[in-house]
Length: 152
Image (cartoon, rainbow, N blue to C red; front, side):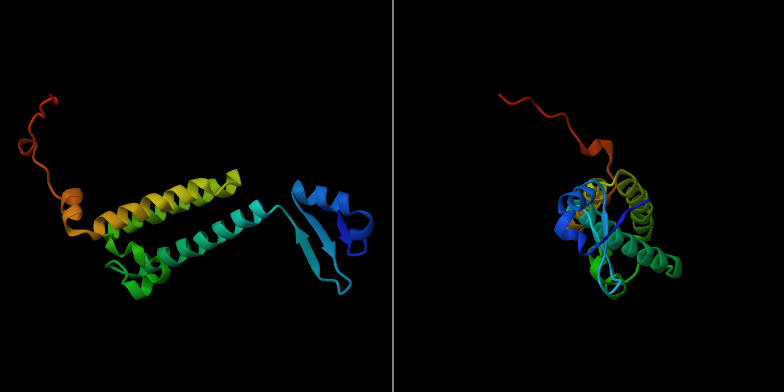
């Protein structure tokens, strides 16, 4: 149970309130009954990041449910960087995003989420280049390769 402090407590119990906030959160009731919460900035940023990507996940999941083809740039909006992926890849992204959102929330650490997004963005940039795309997605025959000689 969270103790609720009054705004006037900030004058006398400042250290106690800050300590509560540092170790979770401190709730303060203002004179007009507005409830205010103090918490570590790191935790706030983590919650904001999870909320942002949860919304993106739901939006993309809905787009994929309705469409038989990959969504267009307009539909993707701020996720337009995903436009280079085929439908199966987008579904894989949605599944992976769901898993890392659960992990980030459970761990209270957005680093796994940030790493996932970074890796998918890097892949998207590589696929934008036609030559790299053909190398990454093309068929490779073992006869296309030869043994490399050691440097002299």
